[in-house]
Image (cartoon, rainbow, N blue to C red; front, side, top):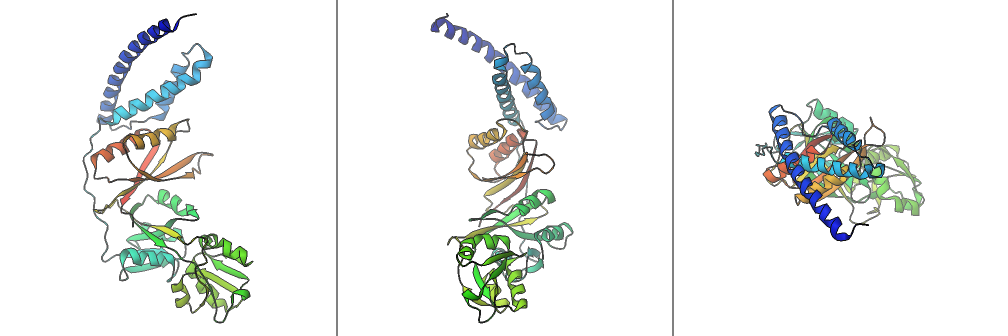
Length: 371
């Protein structure tokens, strides 16, 4: 058996060779990135990386070391891509600011909806508004230039993400230009003279029903999903049935001549919804402090860890991460990440280039102020 001193001496000798080879390899990696820049090529090429890893694993004689060799090679590849990203130029481009005058903004629902309230809070009461029955209609309206911006809810503080809108932001290739957080109070509404004990069923948006589930269960009220809270109030008003109620805002009660049977029936008192304002162009306000990106990863061990490591290495605060399934590939996902920062900072541009080098696809969704 070798003694410890001899083992350490052998490891030191091997490490000396490794460092010389590492330095030599990184210099070649620099030559590679210069070539890719000249020929406008992506730094990360998944097929080539997989080939290199597999080829080198086949050179391992001890089968038990193969998984460790794969980890070593993957780490080496990641270090190489990070090093290559430092040679890219990071000039701060000029971004136009979001417009607030002489524009039309689309929202889902009817007057009195929480989307309309968020729209007014962000743009003011005088902006031209256009309402649509479904969330997808708002995206389609922007696609066909019927509106200048759209506004939709993206997540609720108590019930989580509105997944359809996450998917739509990816599918339509639009940009987030603003955000408006809105405190949401849910109220039980009914036709004139209706009492709480009269109500057997209520209509509301699925989020409204989720946010008031405890109240509905306690009073044995049947939930019925509707396209929008204000649309539910409008519908209940037309039914004129004392046994049917709606869960919506106080403004909806006023607009559709309904009684407020019970106020503030949401499960948690600090119930809030985050709305995003989106447009066709990447526009950045002077106070922008949040960057949203969406990316896909190779289906390999440690790929998501590598992205979070890069974020940590650049001292960036990650505000949120959300995953959604890739429809074309079973059990694979794309990831939404919100980061604190500005695209006007060269160091942040370098961090994003580093992230891009470690992903299959990556797109900036927007750089905007959180309100």
